[in-house]
Length: 143
Image (cartoon, rainbow, N blue to C red; front, side, top):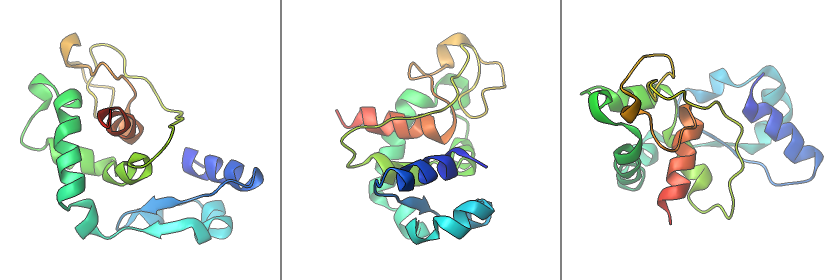
């Protein structure tokens, strides 16, 4: 159904380690195949960790590069939460390398959905969209 399931299947096939980080409520969105063949790799992450100081500090740092200009509204953190992006921090925090498949943000589109017009200067330089874009930003912010 989705990228997580596909990459999980490939990881198993090639005998790589596999972890799916799931925040509260995320498992309901997992596909039938992932639940049947990859549930051994489900790592349930408590809300206290996802909203704790380490992830929150990383979120604020990444937002300096991702939530620009008029997109920095009082509800920007809720919009990020709707992407389940915080769990992605855990995927890249200690990674040696990051390979992603994602959609690219078109210049002049918002970073939350990629659909709303914004001034071109408000499209992040690291123009990968969605939660994957946040994962990429967190990886870059390490250096």
